[in-house]
Structures are given as structure tokens and as C-alpha cells.
Amino acid sequence: MTKIFVVDNHGQFTHLEHRALRDMGIETELIDNDTPPEEIDADGLVLSGGPSMDDIGNCAEYLELDVPVLGICLGMQVMAHVLDGKVGGGEYGGYADVTVEVTEEGDPLIGSLAPETRVWASHADEVKQVPSGFERTGTSDVCGIEAMSDTDRDLYGVQWHPEVAHTAEGEEVFENFREICE
Image (cartoon, rainbow, N blue to C red; front, side, top):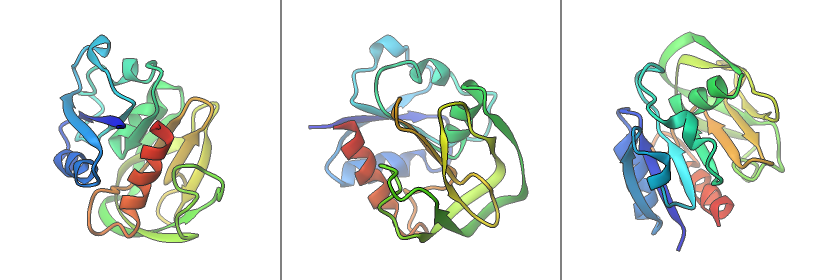
């Protein structure tokens, strides 16, 4: 059975991410972001959202583990920041219902979604430039980089929250991530 750990970056939706995976029958555990990397025995990691880049614990070290990683909201921004992409303030700020255009049909994380999908996202901060090795896989009128992937390293990020009911195809994102982890 695939085991995916959700790294708690102290965001308001972290427990929903954990529950969504558990409800899909995925073995999952919620761990704090200061858990030592050597204690992680998982097939994949979800870097949760959170309030601040100032409290990311060991997330940079988790990116060096040889397991797939899905960054959600702040988790995606952490990934971009640590790997020399660019992160900055968003033009539109808080949470909103957004239409994301999937720009890479072959992407293993979001390529199976509808060409345009409705999501719930925060844009207080956002990735402005993907790190080396990543491709932009989703965009919107609100944010130029709604999703990114580095398939060689199995590192993926979405600006939106697949775990909330407002996101149309959120469960499919998690199912695709489970397949990546297998």
C-alpha cells in the first residue's frame, strides 16, 4: 500500500489534506515540518500550505529525499524558493474561485484534468518563476504559474487547494499523485 505523509506547515487546510488522502484509502500520516528527514519512511510527501515562509522547518531537506513531493500553495512556493525559482506577492491577494488552464496535457499530476478546471486558491504569494528543471503546467488570469512539475525529480506543485470542496477535480489530483508515488 502506498504511504504518503502530509507535512504540516501550520496551514488552515492541512488536516483536510490528510483526511482527503485517508478517505481515498491511502495510508497517510500527518507530520510536523520539523520532523527529522531520516525519520521519514514514506512513498511520497505532501508539503501543505501555511501562513508563512518563515516557518517551513525541514521542508528544504525533504526535497532531497528520493520520494515524490507535491507542494500545495505555500508548499509549492517553498519548493520554488528552495530550488532557486522566484516567489513574490500576488496581485489579487486572498482566496478566490479561479479557472485554471492546464497547459501540459501529458503532465502526470494535472494532465488528466479538464483543459479548464475550477479551483479554490489563495494568491497572497505565488511563484513568479519556476526553478530550473520545472515546467509551468497550469495558468490562470489571476496567476501566471498555477501549477508546475519537474517529472525527472518527481516534484510537483499547485497553487490551489485540491482538498477543498470548491476545487472541482481535487480528488483526481490526489489520485494522480498516488499513482506517481507507486
